[in-house]
Length: 171
Image 1 (cartoon, rainbow, N blue to C red):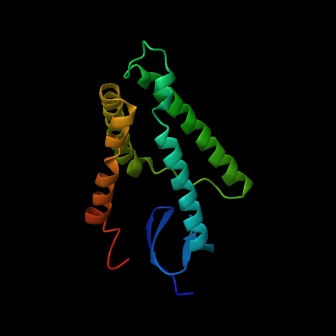
Image 2 (tube, helix red, strand yellow):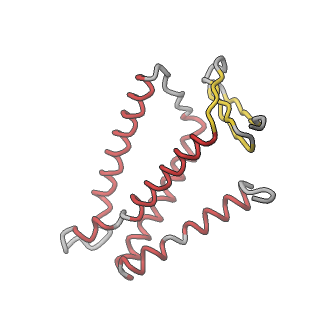
């Protein structure tokens, strides 16, 4: 087991960590009082489980459109899709709140002043991409359009490697 290397950034009450190497991840509560350690193996399992679910969920994302009324051709699908996304967000928030409460941890601060603009821009980019994916599938079909939409993986990989420097040195 190697030593942990953690870079922490504090902004008001919040604390984030960026672990670059080592076997343990250092976590602190928002006040910086309590230090907890979480093994990377547990983090990898959670990450792989979430990635597998995303693969299933996003791979099935446009399937309900095939079962929609034949008069619903594509963009009409967005209204109910948006309502479903909003309901899912509310349910996930309250589930997270219940989990934090049950484990005796307070909810982290919101940081509206810092997070609002990037979050809104992200939502706008995602929505524009979603509209484009629906149009691609409408014109090319699910078997051709959806795999082409997955070029997003290449774009996000390039962002991660080139801009965010997520890959440095040999693997």
